[in-house]
Length: 295
Ligand SMILES: [Ca+2]
Ligand SMILES: [Ca+2]
Ligand SMILES: [Ca+2]
Ligand SMILES: [Ca+2]
Image 1 (cartoon, helix red, strand yellow):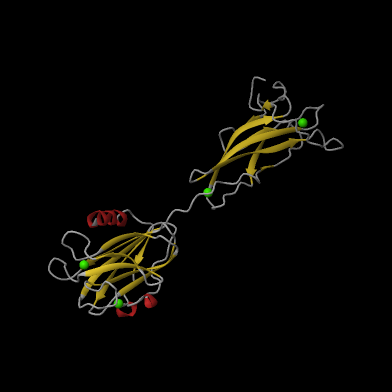
Image 2 (tube, helix red, strand yellow):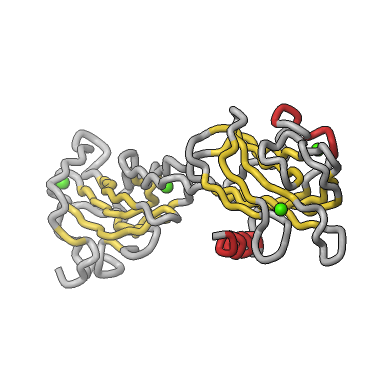
């Protein structure tokens, strides 16, 4: 049981955590939960901290981890730095919750080492502490006679927050209306897609349709009225049927965040018949594929 924990710990500590820093050794001023202070902030990604501490008879060293969430994983280890073969001091290592209840414990990490190592997954949200004492003091009250310098390493791997997909419900095309109908292609952006987690969102145009037959290719400068499917930006032709009630383009898109969450939607762009009494945009629906050069 002990060796796998130690192997996992070494793996975690050597996997280049995002945050790293040094623990301040305030010697005897950290003998209890009340005096531990918060030394290690909980970051969005894995973080690791290391420091050298001095253990003296009657001494306990507490390091505060602050407020942790259920699912966070704490790993901690001590390495004795004195004596022949670095066997001194013989430490014990514990994790405590805010009520002072010991929730994890280790004496010897494995093999012959009197150093300690543990991994603990937080079960309920709250403040937690890592504590080191001398062998023979399982209540971490300083009832021991061990002394010597030791290195303490702690890593914190925060539970990953569940991903909420992007929200396409407020998406709109910009611009929403094209005027004048000069038959030029105009770039259309999709705006208003948000992600509840603040994740970056990538947008892809999936379809462009319109409610009127395509513009006569002989009078337009290219065959299709819509382009950009498969890219992040659509373009549509500023044209409409002279006898119609306004041309409406329907631009379909999907939005994907950087954790694989997705939404899809449609935004419309209108080319009104005129700017006078007949400026309505009556949408007969996505009847014609704007990218179809053969129609
Ligand atoms: Ca202390
Ligand atoms: Ca030990
Ligand atoms: Ca998200
Ligand atoms: Ca129409």
